[in-house]
Image 1 (cartoon, rainbow, N blue to C red):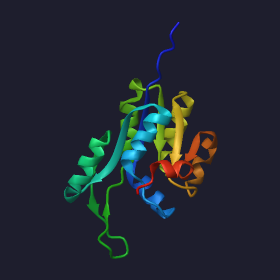
Image 2 (image 1 turned 90 degrees about the horizontal axis):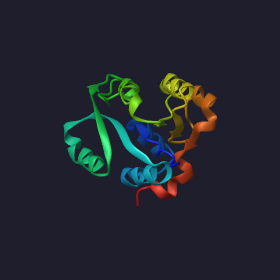
Image 3 (image 1 turned 180 degrees about the vertical axis):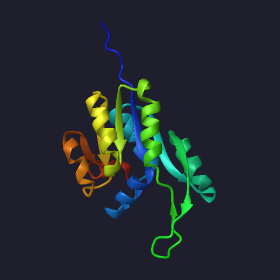
Image 4 (image 1 turned 135 degrees about the vertical axis):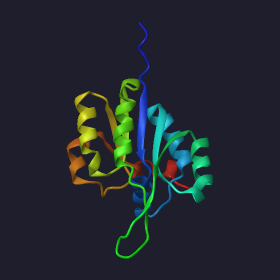
Length: 164
């Protein structure tokens, strides 16, 4: 009897991943990362959640070409300490799309170290659909420690996915 192939989807908080990796002193090559997800975890669909800024269209085109399904979040100008910083918090979109896609995958990989995804990790674990939580560095939310058996740091495979 042939074993049915598992369907694995990845849900990526691009800002958390990008900034977390940079805080470790290196730059992620998103194309190499997508290839790694396919080779290591057999990820069929990788949903990348990102704030939309029109001037970044070439970045979005390259991410699309690398095999990501991009989910945009409108951005807003923040007023943090007088700085006009652009924000595109994607947490709600990531959780929503992981639930919309829920019937379509057997296992999910959450890529973020953000504790806001605790409830998603808990639910996926309960439903036996949590494959991994890939965190950008070792400074991830203490809320996720409960899922330690699922956690993998990008730093462990940095040489395979770093730019340059």
